[in-house]
Image 1 (cartoon, rainbow, N blue to C red):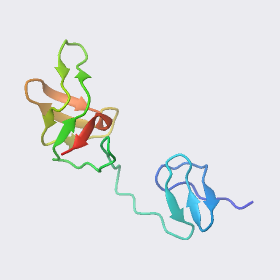
Image 2 (tube, one colour; image 1 turned 180 degrees about the horizontal axis):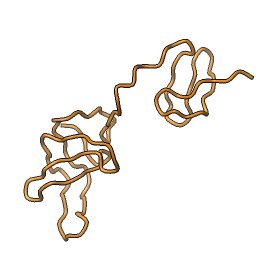
Image 3 (cartoon, rainbow, N blue to C red; image 1 turned 90 degrees about the vertical axis):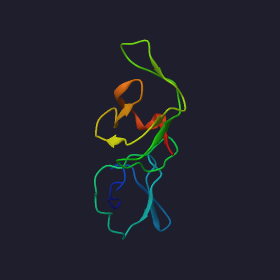
Length: 112
């Protein structure tokens, strides 16, 4: 049995062949066996809809988010301007009017 390369997107070792393509069952990425992997330009952050996020974007909160340690809530539909992307559990650093500095998870926002 030939050794198949890991997935270039997520690094999974469970790739399999599907005709002329290699497929990753974990992230559903498909690529050709002879294709060189794309140059790693760092992490890519995506919103709840799968749209790529960048520093300085404006996003909207898609779910009421309780603020830990207080009784405040960031309401659904709150616009957050000029986000900054960072690595970690909460991958968006931002300032929300009326709340202050916060860290948000990209899975709870959508790009405007």
